Every structure is written in C-alpha cells, then in structure tokens.
Length: 371
Image (cartoon, rainbow, N blue to C red; front, top):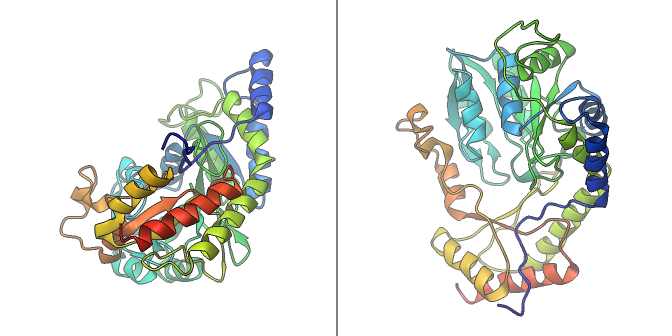
C-alpha cells in the first residue's frame, strides 16, 4: 500500500486564517472567555438558528448537560433518548440525576422511531432528546406531534448537524434547547467546544450561569455551577470556521451525490436515504452491509485500497456497561441491526475527485468479490 496515499475517514481543516485568529487572541492578552466568545455566540446564532439566544461552552457534552439542567431536568424525571448514538446523549441525562429511557430507531435515517418513542412514554417522562444522527434531521413532524400530545419538551442533540433542515426549518430551532458540537471532526470546529441554542432568554441565562460556577456577576454565586466556559482562543477558531462551513457543507453534499450515483448499482450495500423534507449535511456517509461481512469489507478497503472507514456506533448505548442498568431486559431490534451493519465511508470536504473515484471503485470491487 505504500504507493497509494491513505484516505482518512475524517479530516479537520485548519488553515492560515484560523492560525492568524489564534495569534491575534494570544497577542491581545485576553485568552479566557471574553469578547471573542461573545461575538462567536452572536454570529453562530445568526448563521444557524435564526438568531435564537446561544451560549458557548467547552464541549458538546457540557452543552447537553447544562441545557438539561437549565430546562429543569433532574431526579425523578425520564428523558427518552436513542440507544444508537454516542454515549454522551444518555450520559448527559444520567448526569442530571434523571433516567435515560432508550427507544429504538428507524433504519432509513437512523433517527428515533416515533412509535418506539410513543411506547416509551410514562408519567415520569419530561422530554424527548432526538439525535440528528450523521447530519440527517430527526423526523420532526411526528416527534413534535407526540411531544405536543403528551405535553413533553424536546431537547435536540444536533452535535453532527450544523446547517441541516427539516421543511426548511433549521435544526436547533425545534427544541427547548439544542446542542451543537464543535469537536475537531465535526462539520466545523473551534478546536473543542459546543453551542447551546435556547428557546428563550431566560433559559440562555440559566445556561450562562451554570457554565460559570453558578454566577453571572463575579463572586455572586446564585447556584452550584460548573466551569464549562469556552476560551477566546477556541472562539476565534470557530468564528473563522463559520465563514467556511457553508461551502464545506455544499462539498459534503456533492461528495455524497457522487457516492450515491457510483454505488447505486452495487449489490450488497444500502446507501444513505434522505427524507423528502430533509436537508442532509453528511457529517458521515453511513452505509449498511451484511453484518457477517462488515469487518472483512472494511479491512479489504483499508489494506487493498487505502480507504479509511469508521463504525459509529458498534455497541448500542443500552448495552454499554455504563448505561445498561437503565435498560434491563430492553430489546431494540432496529438499533441492533444498525449497530451490526453500519460503517461510514469518507465524505469530508478534503476529498479529491480521484479519492471519490477510488472509494467507489474500491467498494464496488470488494463487494463484487464477496469480501
């Protein structure tokens, strides 16, 4: 393989503009949370969530946790979450003292199945936390209808879905709050960090107080809080990335279209489906193959064609040692199928036309060979 360059499954893009922004902050002497963070919050809100009040934090998980606390979620409450996602979704609920209740997904888009959500509702249910997984929005029409019918709140996990929409409505504007991750491999990054889009100013203030040791004015601690602040260094990176993310999203969608077309006639692989109402931003391009062949296929793509892949997520949350106590005896058949069959092909903006062609050709040959 030495003669073939490796195609990584993800590749953060950091350019000279980001480096210059960091240097500008370093020279200013104001490194911790300050004017860059405030500007980033305003710019992110205007760019992605129709100007909803937005609070910057040090990670997506912190944003999820603080959003739930600000919304009043705590001991005695239940929040319905998917099991097919990163563990931070269920973790953030458990960290409040509430109980994560795991529901199944639908296999077309890997998002919460409305009927499974309905079946999981109990008198203790306070909210539903859908995940816009891989960049595809949750089935908003149906989940919103269930929430309204039962008087429940929606808390959005939009970690992977910057710029995605449902019926032209941006993700991050459906819930009491929404969390966006700014981890390096996300569709845009601040190096590390998260954003919490809030339904109103009162909720946003609660998140701000919780992220800053429970205080808004120095030494006037109102509640027991956390140190979950974003630094101006990170915000400066994020502000530059905001000027680039729309083009990167276009490229991701163009790359996905090339993969869709190239793999359309290949037997043994199911490419991503997109709901008619949805704009998919392809944080991941996730396919399904026979579970018994998945590892062999991935190994062949890596060793024979230099194509990196990822499995997100091989162990459902309700079977993790850390979370299984919340789901004793629970059966989620669609989640189990997805966990056994999925893997993600590169779709990131750094791919060349030659890279895309190699991915299509490699997958075609490996599947045809019956890897």
